[in-house]
Each structure stands twice: as structure tokens, then as C-alpha cells.
Length: 345
Image 1 (tube, helix red, strand yellow):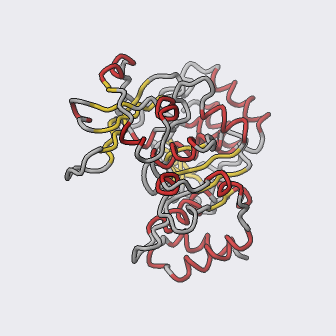
Image 2 (cartoon, one colour; image 1 turned 90 degrees about the vertical axis):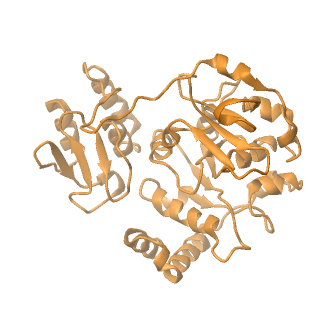
């Protein structure tokens, strides 16, 4: 890490503790008070937030998070970084990080335009075409509906496949670095989801591609898939770089299960996101009453457009989250318990 990078961090308020090959500092971008929570490698600028479990990220993303409320200064700092020979667009930490694999577009020609599986789930062929989905007749994704995943350069960097039969294999299979995906933000279309999120300043976070297509099919197109129960550091970084007024956490609602894992995950994501965004931005919106997920709701013709327009009482939401965490402390980390107590003060 050059002297300029060190100076930038110190100018932003980071008090760097020299630990040999790396620095330690507090996570001031989320108002953290642990002076050693963030580790930054001196040679590359690669950093990680051990408290927030952010994973290893380039220094550029730490600066974006820190200056997300000051776009003028952010642009100025990023320009100075881009003028450096090692502009932090590529980085190599002490541990080897495998490069993202890029797939040729021609691979999609091997997929069959068979839309019966999602037609039965009330998803239109138009929406399926926009998601570039097709049925694999061979290979690692055999008998799966396959969705290509694109990066911001319109390159295919992975695939997600939904099993279409009742076999014993996992329902979903992924090829590529799932934690790096911002899906379907960059799927090529006349207007991309990335552009829709930028324009609306709102985003829905859902668990699966089926949920995303259900919303999309009903005109709610500013949606990202978290591929499971936890929002990734890549999605957090992506949203931090945009002017966002509302983040709607629309996970599942496993109300019939002994443990409502969907609601539990939504609350954990809320608390995780609260490290980076104002509480007034964060909304938890469970699927319509009587439905476990948005895919089921759409399949049974529930009006998701009306559901999306229902306002969340943020004061009641904070109290609910605080009470929920208090009653289920064994399911949350100490940092989340502490955060939950604060949000209702």
C-alpha cells in the first residue's frame, strides 16, 4: 500500500495500528468502536472487517463505504486512486485468491428454450427470456433450469441451476463464486436491473431466483437475489455505492416450521445491514399472509404489486426486532444482540 493510500485512510479518520505486514483500525464506516476490528494489508490494501465478517475486499471498497454520504469527496478520492499505477482494480493478498472465470456467451446455445417448469409456477415466458434461462440437457447442470450470471462488463461469470425433477440432488446448484454475484443486476436487457435500482433508489432483497422472477413478473423489477439466507459483502458494497432510499428485505416466512428460519434470517440481515445504512432505509417485508415465499404467492395469483405498496411501520418494526432478538438470544451473536437493544432506544 503506497504512502498516498495510507495518507488517504488517515485523512478519513482511520487510526492505523502498525502490526508488521498489516494495519489494524476501527470500522469507522459503520461507527465501530473496536480499534482492531479492521485489518488492512500494507502491500495490497486488501482489508477485512472481522466483526462484520465482510470477507477480503479491495481498499477501494472501504473508501466507498466510508464516503458513501459524501459523493463529491468520494469521486475526488477515487480519481486520485485511478491515477495510481496500481489503481486497486486488481489486488493480490497474502493468501491466493482464484481469478473469476469468464464463460463464453456461446455456452447458452446448449440450453433448450423449454419454459414449462416455470410456466407451471405462473412465471411468464417473457420474464424467463429476460432472465436468459434455459433447460440443460447434459453436463453438470443436467435436468436443471439454468440462469447465467453476468458481471458489470456483461460477461458471464457463473450459473445457477434449479432442479426440475424430484431427484435426491440439491434443489439449487451454483457454478462460480456465488458470494461475488450481484444478480440479476447486470443481466443484459434493454434496461438492466442495475439501472432500475439506480432510478428507483429502492431494492428488494430475496432469497432465490424464483422469488425474483415472481416479483419481476408482477412489475417489481428492482430486485437482487442473495442466494440463501445471508446478504453478501459484495451486495452490501454494491448498494453502498448507490444512492439508496429503501432496502426491502423480503426473505421467506417459514411460519409453519418450529423455527422460522426465513424470519430469523431477515432479522439477521437487517442487523447486518444496519452497520452500513440508516435504520430508516431498512424495511423487512415478509411474504403475504399465508405464504412461505414470494414464489408461492405469485403461483397462486396473489397481487404482489399491492403487497409491495403496503408501508412498514418502522417504529413497530424496531420494537419487534428488539423483542424477537431478546427472546431468541441463543440464535444471535453478541454484536447483534447489542445492536438490537440499541435500535429500540
